[in-house]
Length: 354
Ligand SMILES: [Fe+2]
Ligand SMILES: [Fe+2]
Image (cartoon, rainbow, N blue to C red):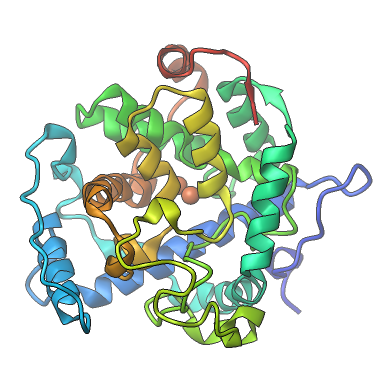
């Protein structure tokens, strides 16, 4: 019998059935497992002798794939803007990516998770989730209170527990700060996973909070993790939704594409409404789990020119999200004043609607 935390199903939190620290550990563990699988997939894709793709490599690959698209026009990929914040971190150039690998351990749990997610993330569900989001306010609190609330779910007295959400938030932000990146970029590190608060509000489980994201309303591509599990999705056989473009059009722009509902999309809308963060920051929040796009470089035929710039931003962020977990842990109270000031700089109103 697997231990209780290995079960992939968690009942929705209710007053009688509040999430326990154990539930939180599972949420975090699942997210970690997914990251590890992505990490492994990334590792397998790397060329021999080249420990890491650079953004240049990725853009070249992206360009090649675009040219291969049937009936697609050849496109020029703009040269990379040499802004400092897009330069890859020196700290991660020689990182041992295999240290993230626990594929066998992750495999069953992650597969079960994706089976449920891929079956239930339909167009109908996604429309309803967005209606629900826009028609009510789930909580009013400050960004920092939100982080603390999220952390409560994960705060376990177990000394062997993995990182809590606030640890991950601070590690990501501190890694970005250490590299001298702009303050808006640091703030993204801090709040990028804050949307996991959804777990306390409207979620139906974990499948609509965490995990890789993907477009609904068009064909589910093989470059999405565990693609076979989409066969159980009612949209899989729907002729409106199962073609290359589905309900979208060529190069319509990702802003018009409905990505599977989860913490990325939710937090993007919260940040867009309540902050002065730049478009690159909002894209980092919105697309950081869109691995089929920013890692596998799929869906180039839905991208517009703006998305090409945003892709660079999301990739710049992704290294910090993944690799900062190897970094040291920080004292929350010591860093709190710095980040409270940072939050105030970009969130004009202290109390915001979540
Ligand atoms: Fe995330
Ligand atoms: Fe994260």
